[in-house]
Image (cartoon, rainbow, N blue to C red; front, side):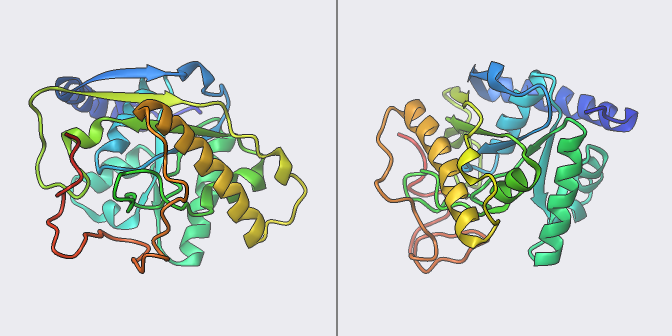
Length: 256
């Protein structure tokens, strides 16, 4: 994707600040970066800490792929941050159906130009108590199936030790290690030609989430839960922070 001069300059400015800070906070290991397509694609990472967009964005930027995230529309109204998001062509996501459709349309345009669009299928930080990927939303699957766009699963682990989910402060010492692994594009050929109804999109989303979870299991060296965490079954809201009753934000989410 050919970035505008303003976009390139803004990315260089952000990288000049963010990369040294990230390198100071964490050592890093990146695996499978050769699997990133040369053309446009959807990157689908797990979401377990507020700072993981920096981790994923760092990896992609170092592979000369400018990261374009689907981000909450409210972030574009934050003084200082909003102009940076707009200048680097990040995509605002609104909660309404019409707003979501507009977001996917912009995302499709970015991919068509050869760009990398990052979509967190979970939609928000995972609610799983052990930080495994939870049930996904269907936006990434819809965009992929409508446009024949490859979906590249990405898993990362370690950044949550620096800034725990719902945390209030950074934990810088001792220095932590962040690991990112890029998987092969998800095979969605079984859904080709099928109507893009709820059943198809849900099934395709499950395939994407399975790929992300498998990568994360390899990083953690653990077996994931037999059943993926479903906020609806736990009577949890779809969006916003969730904290167990009687638990302080960030408590119980830090690695030992």
